[in-house]
Image (cartoon, rainbow, N blue to C red; front, side, top):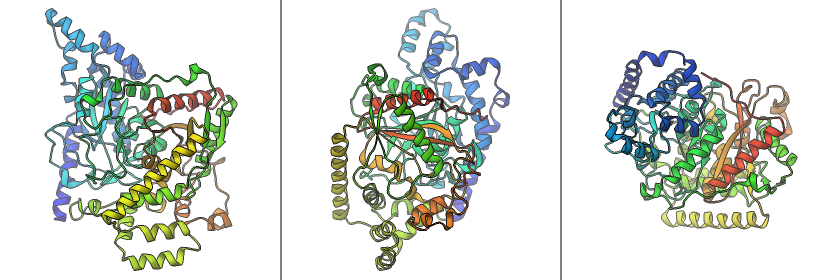
Length: 575
């Protein structure tokens, strides 16, 4: 059976290489001046140019195809190259039709295509007919799905160019993007570092300019951590706001913490335009999981009122590293300079909520994720370590917890509670989750907050292979908002500076380090400002449920404040 796994991996890698070899030679050439101008167009302008006929979809594909191939060569971020078939949709009939009698119907069709000519990539969890949906597993290789997800049909009706699928880690739950099927995906800013997970391939591709929009998914930061690591923008909506039916993951049927779609983009303007145009297409008519909620007009900047921002400086488990804390401070100070009220927010215990959340995610003892792969399939070390912990006899975990309770109460509690749950135990956890949601709502309302800001992760992009030391638990800053079902976005703020963001030379022997819990010590053991120099650092902004429009506006307020403070984020040209 392990040989079956190896053969499937080799087959998929040969298939991908064959796709690359079959690409037209033009995709290996540099962008022309015309293509560079086309590539620089924002989403709204690109659609207008395509509708006017001054830009053809094949011109768009030529420019973005070149960027996609370069991005893959640099980072290993693509699972499927779908360049030619991306143009084989009815929305592009106008560019091949020569019949004048069809002109009226063609023009009407174009008016109904709000994403005409927009290159969009799909995480390898989204079903698209004729292609595998592997979620990084060899068992799904050479099993092309027969039907596309409603989201894919919706994007095709909108005139989007669906040109690539992007890499994910094995079974998705990870902090680095690596699988036996596709290998490791690296950070385009520094290929010795991680892109995050699980939408790592999409993060790398968007950062390299190979796609306008990546269709990501998010259970515990799977889109927001790659956005933070790769210096791009992302927005996780609430359950039901964006189409999700027809996406695959390793725990079907699990509802206690629901996975959601979370688009990513290279600019905030593109991200907002995409969300607005998608909701205008009435996604609930395509996907039964969507709430029939039209786009709400929110314009906080024209209103001119000053906003109240709550800052969460740490989650009680792992204090942000100097680089990430500095990014958060830059945002808080920039907002204050514009007259906004910025206060420290002390919500109900985050560590207690996260402990509850980890129990929910692994309430089956990790069986679904452990057993879904073929024999010989490699699980990423952080996930394997968690599953191994779950498999320990409870009396052993109680002993570990007993001896750790005085020096590391968080880890002691986590170890003792991480075991398979009965139906009644899981229902009790869900009831407690809802109590936390009620308490957060009450605290947020009492303090009259518009938004909460915090880091997306305590670290910048990890060095490759260090995810086990950083651990899955370090994703608590993002997982928090999946448990609450709050809207949360990430935007880039600054870059790591090896001088400003370094730890003291004796930090690892300091009382502060020795007083940290095991999770924080593991995270700080991989923090190295010199190695991380030049990597992006972002900030996370959260609103309440179904506040996607408001959070996007809040992201614009932050971006404007940073520019007025003289510290705008300027992305680098990577390929």
